[in-house]
Image 1 (cartoon, rainbow, N blue to C red):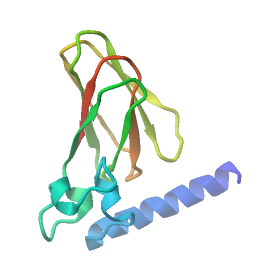
Image 2 (image 1 turned 60 degrees about the horizontal axis):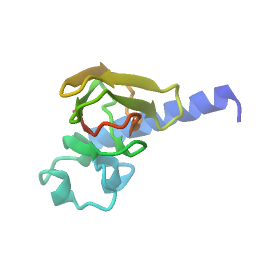
Image 3 (image 1 turned 45 degrees about the horizontal axis):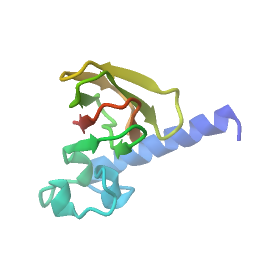
Length: 140
């Protein structure tokens, strides 16, 4: 697979996700909006008649080094990702799209919250605890 075919497939997937959002359906089902794929719609906080992609996700508790969670992103506009350091030492989150783009590192001092707003184009992201301080992560 070359770069051109990967980009074409990514564009096709982004278009499918956008159409699914407009039609009120999810491509990946309930795992698309949940940090816990086995969770029910009620556990995710979704309301009847509201597509799962629109449900606010999180907080995901990343208590140990290497623990991670997946989050959906908005196709139109940015997705706000907030990382809260619940420990007493330096914390860091590693954010990477499921398409394998270069990761972004978010440093968070002890007891503080840091938020970023990025446009990931509807591609789910994975957030991993890259330090030894417990983190709480939300995406909107």
